[in-house]
Image 1 (cartoon, rainbow, N blue to C red):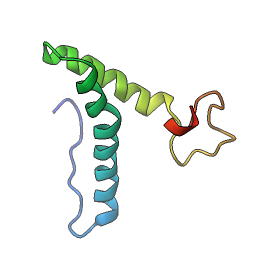
Image 2: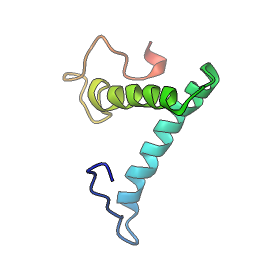
Image 3: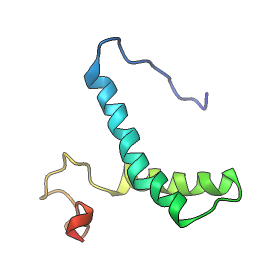
Image 4: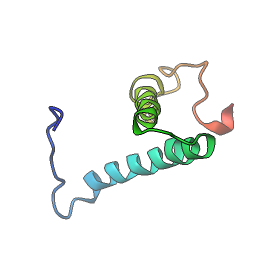
Length: 83
């Protein structure tokens, strides 16, 4: 599907599954809950465009939690309480 290699996590592998679960929680908290409060989507394409923009920011712009402060973009707050 879409040239993506789909894999399954190993049984009894909480570390691998934890990464996926954390991403789902981040997406829920930082995208879905906010998007559906701000806007009523008329089409799935409209929603997909907003999700794609959020994914681009998540993957390319925002610093990873493991990024040290020296390498992170100093002008960008690291979490909402630092804005």
